[in-house]
Length: 285
Image (cartoon, rainbow, N blue to C red; front, top):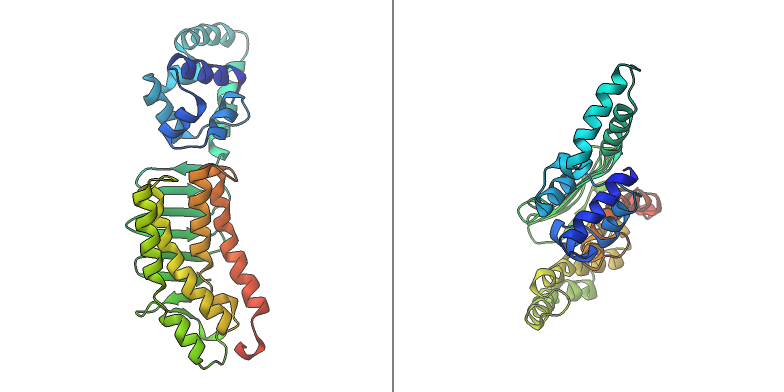
């Protein structure tokens, strides 16, 4: 983004008496993202530009070029066209368009949607849960029907009808469930998660009900940790759920880049399972 556009974004925000934090909350980005736009260190994507135009009550053309500037540029382009076949304004517009194409795409319409310029995709919403598609073909799904992990088109990790995290035969170890393992699996951890959800929500602290539901993500984490420990196989751990919880926390508390960059944590999922397949016990081979 050029410095003129960055200054224009700054002026529009001041004219509407908005702080960077207030503007960030209105359009669903981090305060750091707004700050970078106004310092010309980064460019807002198309969705964010549309949101900014709606907040300021202007068109995209006015937001990017300004009312007076747009007419001035038209006159300059007419004059320069007679002198050269490659106007400077056209080059600047091409560079600006190129910046938008190369930026990662983040959308908050009907959930959270992240499309990386490298080919990785993350989609999160209430209906379909968490879906991660990596550029190498690996897929992770965490939803109401459980956890499913695909590697090269083959399902390697999934949740059965009893809520147990199951692993492909190639990853399983020879194991008979011990009494202690059964005791931990039968422990009603879901009741603790439910109590925490209600206490957090009613207290109203740390975003209250809007964030307290994250307590339910601790349920699959607990039972998968139990399986991973007793079966001595890290593949049983619900690592994608942990990544989802981390991303949500990053976003709400604006740490590690907030919503804008926190999605990178999902890229650790295929790396985690690749490492697990390398260090798996010999009995599973």
